[in-house]
Image (cartoon, rainbow, N blue to C red; front, side, top):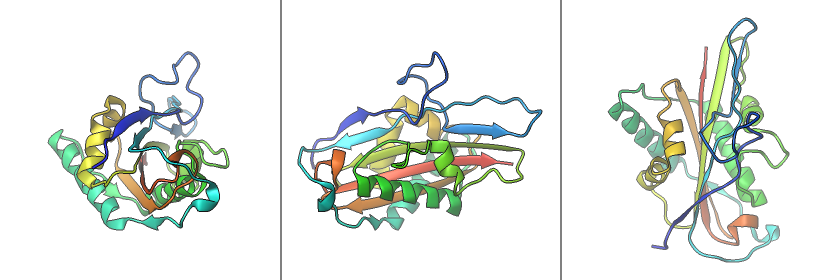
Length: 209
């Protein structure tokens, strides 16, 4: 198996004034109805896993294929870890899964890796298109990402996140109630993936009520 090298990449959006771009973990966004205390955090860090260099152009990319069994297994591993820490297991959210899959596919097609969409939407605005606040009193979302050119199992994916304190903190955030995972595999991925065959995983967490 190829050697994996962790890499921290850019944050989702501009952090609050005075907050370093690479620092404490923040959620993508939080909103509440008027009259409720509100704080907004806009940066979540991502984990990239690089196995070997290569070259590619956007035209080299093959269609990404969804990895539903991997998505389900990652959810199971997350919930097992949360139970070990006395936390509520997360319900599967079709809305969050749709947001996660779209983002994984967009990164695969366009050869980038980060929380903002290729159209420039921030993490919270991108997820809100699928998982809106609606008539709820509060809404909060977060996200973790990874990509790997080595073979990736659910256990390996979770271990890579957990080994990063910032990602571990997101997964073990007590307030989350729902999660959606979007995992895709693409051959000859363009852009930063350098023509590799890669697996890209987005996990979107949410709570609203």
